[in-house]
Image (tube, rainbow, N blue to C red; front, top):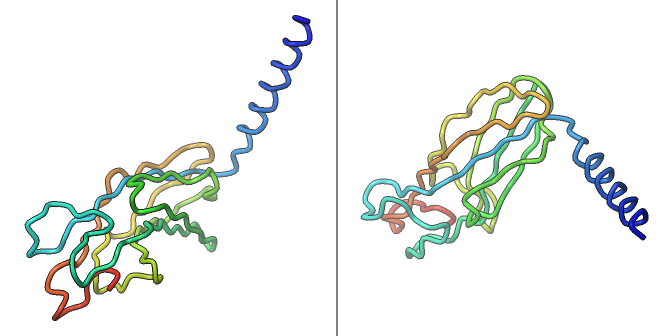
Length: 149
C-alpha cells in the first residue's frame, strides 16, 4: 500500500513539474489605481465612481508589441492587480495600459494613461510595471465627456 501511494505522489509531482515547465516567454505584472482629473475632492476613485455622467470602468487592458508581434491581456478593473501568462515573446516590448468600458473602448479624451514603456522580455522572467495610475475624467460631465459615458 505504501509503495502505491508513493507511486501516485511521484506521478503527481512529475505532472506538476512538466505542466509548470512550459514557459515560452516573459510575463508582465502590474497594479493600478484610478485618479480623478482635477476638480474632484477624492484622491482616487473606484472603478465605478458612482458619479452622475460616468459609467464603470470594467477592465484594465495591457497591450504589448514585440517586433511585429502584438498581444494583450485584460483584467477586471476591481481586481486592481494583474499578471500575464509567460507568453510575451523574447525581445524589446512596448507596453501600454488603458481602461475599457462595458460598451468597449474608453474615449481617449476621457482618460490619461502613462506613456508606453519599453522593456526587455526575457523568457521565464516577469516584468513589473509597478503601480500604474490612470487619470479619469469624472467631473463636469455635463460640459465634457467623462469616463465610460
